[in-house]
Amino acid sequence: MTSRKIILLAAALALLVAAPIGQGSYIVYTLCSWLLFSIAAMGLNLTLGYAGQVSLAQAGFMGIGAYITALMTMAGIHWIFAVAAAIGACFAVGLLLGWPALRVQHHFLAFVTLAFNTLLFLVLRNEEEITGGSFGLVGMPRPSFFGLSTDPNLAFYYFSLVCFLVAVGLMWWILRSPWGRAFRALRENPIRAESLGLRIRRQTLLAFAIGSAFGGLAGALQTPLVQFIEPGSFTLVHSLKVLLMVVVGGSGFFFGPMLGAAVVILLPEVLRFTEGYYLIIYATLVIALMVYSPSGLIGLGQKVWDKFRPRQEARRDMQKGFQL
Image (cartoon, rainbow, N blue to C red; front, side):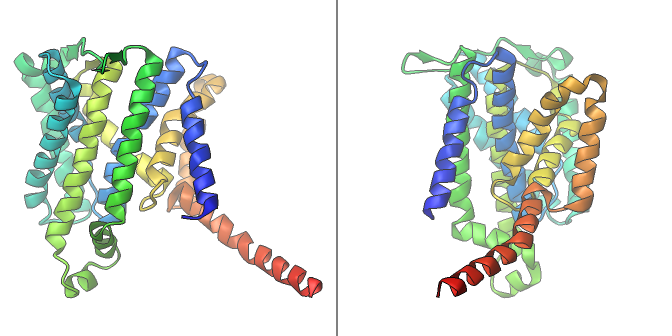
């Protein structure tokens, strides 16, 4: 890693640490929402951007993680054990769903995951004795660690930030491991990857399950953040919202989900000053981006960089020639 990248990462980390200081409760809540949706989008980016499989069930996995965490913490179990159970359950459900679903590909897989998300919503709404039905669950406690409570909004933000950084580090390790290289090979050319000995179904299934586990972690953070969950928070609309984050930021780029989540979560808040027109402006900007840069914001940035980079290099060569 070059010194320039280290400086940029250090500056980004400092910005994340300083962002909520002096802000109101709503701004801190919005920043926490961005962190947890970034985690969910990272998981979907692994499935879509690296393994090349479309999933519309990420909100469903967030719901599984949220309800497991809520039920366990309300029963007096610490959040650490609850989140471990939530992540493990989402990984297992991802394997079970992916095994028959991966017999189909691309948009057919999207329909299967859409059906799963709808089925999960019906189960959460109708099993009132366990999930509270349409009324949901309320009063989930925020965790404490070594006597330090995360009840204050600022404390919970830093707790969410630590979870976010752990998720980022884990995803960075996965993508640079042999698994990550296999995922990229699978996305680029499945036939060539199979001819080189790569087990396509196993790798695709693994990417789907890991992405589902990240969704479970995001749901486990959403439970203590809002301290109220109900089935409507995990419908198809929210899965499409996570998908939009991945596409807008840049599918297949490491920082794409984080940038996309910032646009989807934070941009509407920035545009609030336009009052009733902010949704129109927001939708127009997203449509324009998708028309002119299907690879998202990071892809657009790379195009601009590649366009001006040759001129800069030529200018440097001319300067060196004059100096000689």
